[in-house]
Length: 369
Image: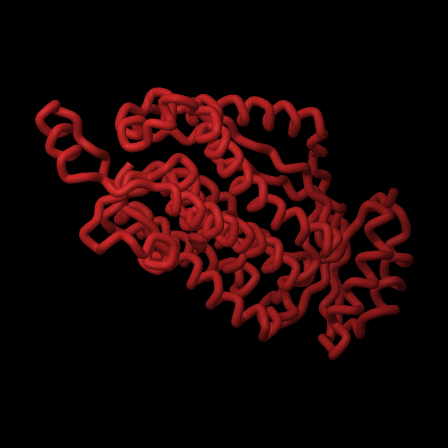
């Protein structure tokens, strides 16, 4: 393990083996080199990382007043989250998801009136919801985990977040997360890690929603009248914009005027799009924030984060806006190499992020729960 006292000259020789040094200074006892960037900046930086990290050190690249500064710092130590914690959280979350499934199947009188088989045997519907919900949350995090693995970024197992089922919003989980235990090397790596979760989650939400909508029920006008007379009101849901395309494909038997009562699996798909929508906000260290930080500098990232927090508030996601503001205030360090630009292909990928955000946008279509 390196210490500050251990041969600055040796560090100097390592840096000069890969970069053309124009000047250097000591900052808090650690060297900062002002280098001349070349065609092989990425590969040279990666090679230097591989030399330094076994010693407990890492380089960073930043632009400082128009110059490229390579700083040598101690490798950040991040707490390792073990498999036992991940397993415990998964079991707890599975329990709260099953409890939410119980609320929207066994205790749902409207669903049982629309589909008598639910009253006779609610278990397949309950388990369908649980499998759909775990799949959406798990596959979202699997996307992040695969990207971390591809780019050599150490990360914790998925940590599911249990949430007690609430009668007016029975979901049973607040999603999941993985904790990065080593920093991404390049902007490209940060982009891939950020976008992979929403992309995987968006695709599985389409599949789950298609299955769920095929199982959902048109609400007879007579039932609506009976419920209104009995003082029971249906909860109106703003629904993902993509449902305008899904419903005609999956349920061509329904007209635009039809009201749909969501099957529990369709409810899981609805929640999946909500998770995608909130996560793709380009704020702080949300998934969209990672993607944005891969494309812009730290100052512009903070400005845009504040702007989109205001958008959250205007759209009514107050609790999420408060959480996002807290995350944004922590800043975003970016990749170790913050100088090499994002690849052109990934710049096009910013359009993909925007498309997923718009497609998941909740709008007031005629869907009900």
